[in-house]
Image 1 (cartoon, helix red, strand yellow):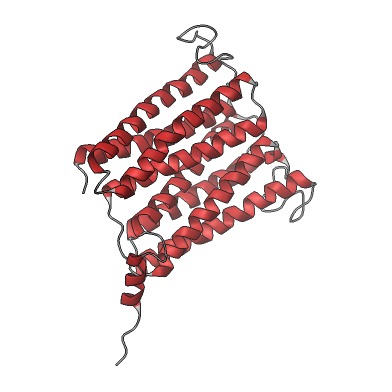
Image 2: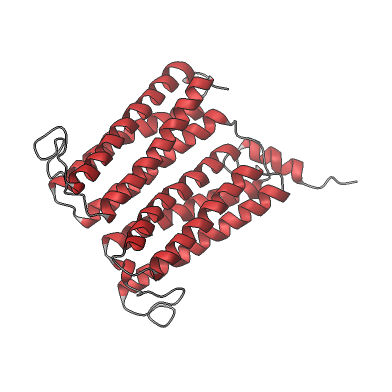
Length: 306
C-alpha cells in the first residue's frame, strides 16, 4: 500500500480536478469564457479587475494552476516511489500529468478563437478523461483491486463505456445548443417521443443514454450488495446518477434564463464529472473483466459439484 501522504495527495488531485470541471461549468453558464480575452494574462494583467466575468474566468485558471501542481506532484511521487512496484498507480498518474498540457492548449485555443463550440466540447470531453485518470490514480492508491464475480466487473466496464458516451453526447448537446430542443418537456419531446428535427433527436439520444447509465448504476448497486462486490463503492455511482437525472429533469422544467436554471446547469456539469469519476474509480477497484483476478473470482463464484 502506498504511503498515506501519497494517498492523500492523489485524492486531493482528483477532487481538485472535479472542482475544475465544476468551475468550468460555471464559466460556461455565466458566459464568462471571454472574461479574459487574452491568455495567459487577463486583459493584459496578471490579476483581473473587479468585473464579474474576468473574476469567474480567472477563478477557472487559478483552479487549473492548483490542479496542475497537485497532479504534477502526484505523478512525480508515483514515478520516483512506485514505478517498480505499483505500475497500476504510476500509469494513470503519468497519464493525467500528460493531459495537462493538452488541456492547457485547448483552453488557450478556446480563448484565442473566441469560444468555438466544437473546441469547447472537445475541451470538456478531454477534461472528463483527465478527471478519470486522476480518479483511477486515487482509487488504486487507496484500494488494491479485489476479486469479484466477473459479472460485477463487466457491469462496471459497461457503465464506464456508457458514461463516456453520455458525456460526449452532453458536450454535443451544449455545442449545438440542443439543450432547449425539446422545450420544457420531460420525458416527452415536443409532445411526442422525439419531434423537432436533428437537435431534438440529439437531446433525446442524450436522455436515452442517461437511462442506460442509470440501469448500469442500479445493477452495480444490486450486485455490489448481493454478489460479492464492494457495497459502498458500487452504491456511490447509483446515488450520483440518481442526483444527476433529477438535476437534468429539473433543468428542463425550470424557466430558461432563470437563476434556478443557471444553477442547475452548473450542478449538471459537476454531476457529469462525478458520475464518470465514480464509475471509473469503481472499475479500478474491481479490475477489468477477464483479468486473472476476475477469472479467479468467477471460479470461486461457481457452484461446487458434489
